[in-house]
Length: 282
Image (cartoon, rainbow, N blue to C red):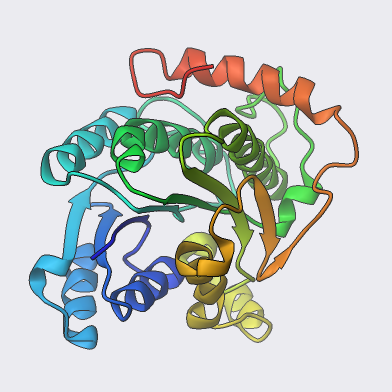
């Protein structure tokens, strides 16, 4: 039985992904915010799939808190000998600028920095798996990114859609860099745009806006399929450093090497912010 860790798995794509992987006899570790919603999701996964209670673990963490992420890493490390799949699915989109309990801009912290910290901290367990896979759930909106490396946390002129796009591009940079760094460790790193589904990401928008959007969105089940495929498909064994738009691998990802300079600058700031926490080495 393989073990898959999934963030943001109490609803939406994360929940549908967890359910799909459970149906394939995997063990799921849910990382969610503490609350009744997360506990109910755990119970619903067990009831709807008929799996054992031991197959669905629940670990609480606010992904906007570096201390809580570190505690989740320690808890998983104490409970499990290895991890076969890590799916960084959780994301937020704030219509107005919000800061985490750590004083970091929310999109940047949850959609990007948390991915780096969690993946880094779980790396020893991933290395123990014969063919570990890390899947970062991205978005086609990354193409709208306008990153200012001098203002990664939007201290001025906050724009919600661009802040979200920037966080997704940074996650894509990280995916590619991590795949290069660990190409000989037997761990694959890929990024996937699963489609646009109705999720909690847009919960800050007015209800009427979400109702209109729902007319054009896919179901969470449909959006989860490419994520599950990346996590389980034998045909994708060894594929790493790639971006998928649903099931289609996009090549070339970047038209030139200019992205590396920006990625290097972002990485230096990432290391500074994660000093004392888990962070992948150079």
